[in-house]
Length: 137
Length: 457
Ligand SMILES: Nc1ncnc2c1ncn2[C@@H]1O[C@H](COP(=O)(O)OP(=O)(O)OP(=O)(O)O)[C@@H](O)[C@H]1O
Ligand code: SF4
Ligand SMILES: [Mg+2]
Image (cartoon, rainbow over all chains, first blue to last red):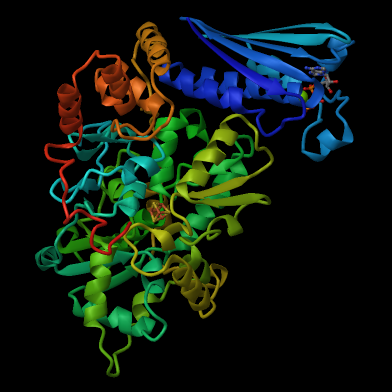
């Protein structure tokens, strides 16, 4: 098994994207199917941006085994009070500043769900959120 | 041609290679290594962008080309060249003089490849119209970019517009025109004058299946010299008819924004291979959205900056801009009546662009994972200086080479130093290792070394 770890700081949109870029390189070296790579990096990127946009700090862990990729995005932040609402297309609490940067359309979580084979969200308001996604191949 | 085998135009002259690391540093796909004191290219990773050739202080890179003598074999001798060719010349030399000189060099027909550009524009517009969902669409114009996508961004292959480049169109256009006038195919020799190595590879091993109709390749840099020497200053004859289909858009096509300015509501033009790499990274993650058309060129200032171009890339572009003003837009230019456009369109279809992952550690994922874990452990011992003295572009690449059996721990000069310090290896042995890597006698004082005689890099 291969394990990769990345730290993300809230508000740091410059570095959000590193985890998905580095993961892509590794998956390509492992000769994972390019369609699976595509789905993984798209979902992972949305997850990274969510930590930068909505949380204080977070850790992204990617575990690759023979037949699946597991991505765990764990953050310290405000948490999500109503997860099913957050999952709805178009729902967003993004600040005007975040919107100015081109984010905040409320598309991220739905897009992650679409690209991952499985998506689980656990969140405690006031503490933080853990998003777990898996991609099978 | 064997399927899957890619012809690469860039070659290294070992006699000239001084074994520095300039080429290795700039390669966007980490395809260069220095072994036994000489540069070598990992063929499957090469995209023919020419960065190595540009960076080489010893002019050790060259491209294979054909001899002008080959012209004698044909009755109809066609020079196929991109409009940037004209842009290189100083203003005082007129278009007419350049054309005249080319005829004097032995060609019977001169064909700026962008002449029938209208066909390409119409086909592309049609494609963009019918493929609203697969946006943004990427132009297949620059072969280096297409190769880059094949080896590094295979998930984006479906975004490439499967329509060939102007030189393919022009070759079939002139072939058809001449055969309409009664010429036999074997009497026609088409010579492509290339601004870059990538186009050579594209001509020699096209992305699709159809074999090329080009008979020979001539390097623009050599050809420019020959044309300049053949320029005559007395009153020249009229060569206007040789460029009767040329249009404003055609002249600007291979310069930056040449394509993107005509397509879609939102189009981006990116030039320079490192910018292209960064953009493709973002594209793959869907980080950039909302665009219809992407023009991507490996060279700064697009083909004006081609590796085999002589003129300054900025003045070349400017001359083309001035020149284009004297020509009408393609909308006002009808192509010859007799032309069978649908036959031409057929030749322009790219049937398949195959992915080729050039970065896999192994075909088998379990083995690849083993190798990756091993490389991760090796990395712990390397200093992270990325100096290149091991012959690999950075520490990570050296670790990967090691797990592939292509390099050794002792290739790292710092690690060797540490081993000496710890008494694990003798001084002499360490020095021998270095000489093995960089060539015998490499570290002797040498006053004829490059850089010694007012020729700093
Ligand atoms: N890690 C997180 N911590 C706290 N809240 C989050 C987190 N991720 C998502 N949310 C909440 O869920 C909402 C919806 O998230 P989603 O990613 O779908 O949209 P967005 O981030 O607002 O906009 P977009 O992703 O389209 O730029 C967010 O606006 C935010 O309120
Ligand atoms: S930009 Fe033009 S000259 Fe440069 S590699 Fe691409 S096609 Fe060749
Ligand atoms: Mg989001």
